[in-house]
Image (cartoon, rainbow, N blue to C red; front, side, top):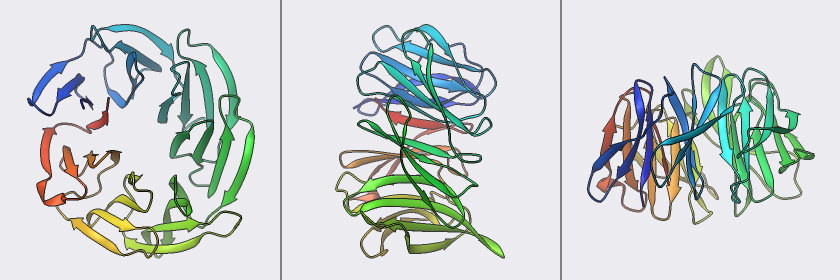
Length: 284
């Protein structure tokens, strides 16, 4: 298990948690973010330049760039390594590009200020942002498969054993974090839990029954059946980037700019790997 870490002020980093060694990657993007990977490449976008860099996993050198939409909010490579899906919060759309050539293959509208996108096999789950839309699009052709509406701003969504888990920002005098679930064959989501403050990152755990949520009160693990908070790390406040891999989780981009490795079954063993400027991280 290795990691890729991006920092707004330096080149991306290849990180080995076993040895704690950091290897800067040869990437000339000025402000990298949205790290992700394929079997052959490490990928990231740039907050200032409209490009995505493709870095060889073997040589750790930038091989080529492909065009990017403005203000990307999500980047997802296909499992086959052939396509790259880009979600833009400025253009309100999602694109499918060929990962080898950068050619634009398909395009589709996606809400208003869309916030997040997850790929599940041949389905893209798109959180449509301020429009309150949740879209399921077929991949790679981006044909509409299903559409749902939620109260508030739809920030993130993922599948779990009971259907869909949907994270929203809800305004009721103040801004709240609301987590909804939507059972199969239902059209109206059910509010599972509501917390103070705006939402951060969100990730369903590999068991399919629990989820990690970045909130103002800390990083929480929540039972998706009951809404019960199983544990909370208050020192990890508003982390924006959460990923799970087996029994480990990455929590990055909290208020202090930390990247933490969290055993989500034993959260007291969490440790800080990196501190920087708006860092994000992914398993590679």
